[in-house]
Image 1 (cartoon, rainbow, N blue to C red):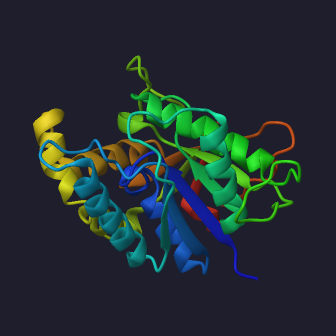
Image 2 (tube, helix red, strand yellow):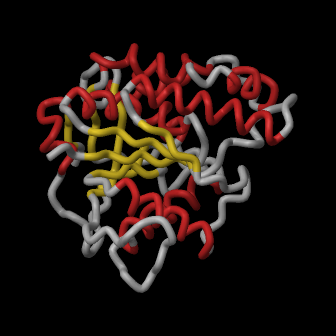
Length: 252
């Protein structure tokens, strides 16, 4: 039976920065790839209206997912206002129930902005709650399995205090870094936005810089880093290592 990985970000392009290489490796193993963002990234512009940039960014995200033969989902929350509340959690529960993943990648619990941190908590809760029959969702039946959950790196591999964040699994993406770069390059609208708002004109280079940083921890050229959710009721086996074998280095 084909296994499914679901990667969830707060915004379009979050996944491409932090997990596209690992998704590509799983796709090579025959996995079905599903990518989602809570928002369409409707604040990621200095020139377009919310409606215009939402349309542009969702098309960019769909193109990126398509490189892996995957599907992109947008939950249509409002950029900069991702809240841990009942309506938003129900959206994420519905997503998990529709996709029915074996493996989930979520945003880091610690990051530079609240949208990412709240999205992390929402995905964690949704993975747990998706099998509860007394939480109805209109378009999907309960999913009676808690998927393996891993947290992606935060931006720059640092928390909001500028401190390095730990990782317990480093994935060698050297063989697919060009594919990861192609996926991120689909998000052309964000280069101008980051230059205007963040003063950053290194959209692709910043991704490679972080990938090199994580790669050095395992003596590889490029890598992505993850933390595994080990809490009560979640799977305790390391599914990522099981699937990717020598491409995963466990950090203890």
